[in-house]
Amino acid sequence: MEFTTKEDIEAPVDRVFAALSDFDAIERSVLRRGVDVRRIDQLQGPCEGMHWKAAFRFRGKMRDADVTLTRYDPPNSMEFNTLSGGLETRTVVDCVALSRSRTRVSLVATLQPKTLSARLLVQSLKLAKGNLNKKFRVRAADYAKDLEDRLKHG
Image (tube, rainbow, N blue to C red; front, side, top):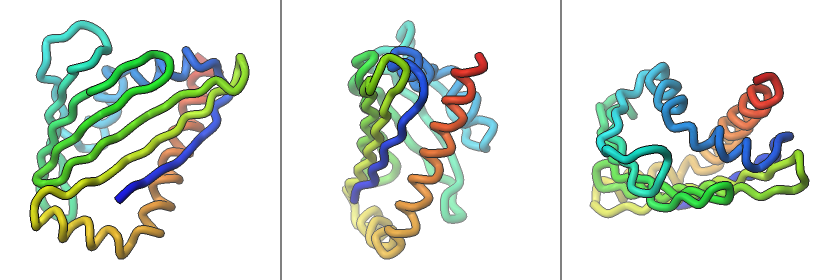
């Protein structure tokens, strides 16, 4: 199962990518939303191999997730692999300069069930795919708008 979206941001590609890979700020933002996240690697700065553990509530149950930055190619792309239960998710973030002051950010999240319970979860998600796609796109658009505002005023 795959979710995709594209957003254009009125800012140079290097600044957009730097904001998207400001993992300390992202960790703080996620913590404010009630997700317990902690970095477990000892690597310096953004780079491949960064690893986080997260705990969050989903559908009334506490879930754990391991997130690894598997590709880091500034200012072009990043790729994350996430394992939560028997569900593997591959998330690719691509940045393309449309002009010196405009950047297109593409986001692709691919869910791959590895266990029976994960297959059942993905099946139930497929039934609501239209609604989930809409939520995914709205959240990405909101994040892109916030990012654009921060880059303009900061």
